[in-house]
Length: 463
Image (cartoon, rainbow, N blue to C red):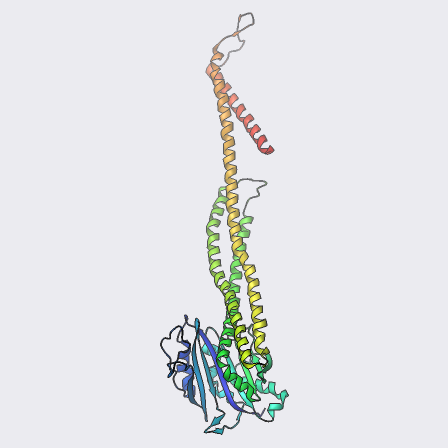
């Protein structure tokens, strides 16, 4: 396709958490981007006050953009750098362009292949920047006559631009297309999936057909930086939640398996109502293991819960910022930007809410398992105590019966007499009276113990 475009631009919006690496973006600019285009160094402050927004060392308090000049092959390029503090993060908005005019004269149209020169060695691709909050790349160009009116060619031009920009890398699938401020725009890369390098790729190709889009981009530039910051916070949080989901699911299954094994290793209480020493030992070990599993599980679940909060906050901020842009550019159609806040981000929130509903059962499962083990042990202890009590009662009855028998054993030495008072002689030799007393006492004690045991068990069954 032989097509000429006018005033090509690249806008890179890249974001990083302050806590992870407060100089990552500045260092990448100085070491990788600046030498490729012979650009000026960024005038970065070492520290800025919490109430300030720009990291620049400005000539005036309101200056947040730094103008840039450089070279692109045989073309002179200009640009802007906007290093900003964004709450707990920071961002760099970088624009490089072949200007519309040079020395008060319009610059010449260029081939679509010019976009390959804007990305030497793919230095603007997300895996090169490697920021932990991702980035958005916006490529803009003016269509010249007659392409301004040939709608059927716009998708092909957009695809060729992104293809040239990415070079050997695979072009992400076209996610959606539409109009933004009256000019066609094409979005590449799904917010739900990563590219082959494991990064969330987000590319926009915007073809200007009149002054409206160019004017609105300039007037809303800072708001668009915020908008894409919120977008990246949302997509990054969701991406990390998918990684945490896999880890949580593995731990949840481990908890379920442990609880299942506990119940499988319990005895059949219908056949054996009491726990053996081995069963008690196993349950004691489980009481040590389960709290640790629960603690590890909670440590993984907490960041996952924080993802839900991040999505909620940034979805709200995205929608508020979009309303601000709409108020500034009314009556322009912002549907292509609104889809993300109204559908995609809301879908992400619902997905994580459903996941939390599933994973919240993990801790409850551990709590129930621990309560069950303690309940089983307490019941078993109560059964043992009651059995011991029954034995003590029965033995007490036996001892009492034996004592009574022993107290009457002295009568065994007395001779037998008839009703008339005559002494009776036994036809056989009787054992020693002491032996008779012992046997008789033992018989009475054993009989009383057996009867007491039988009666107590009968009463327990009735209870």
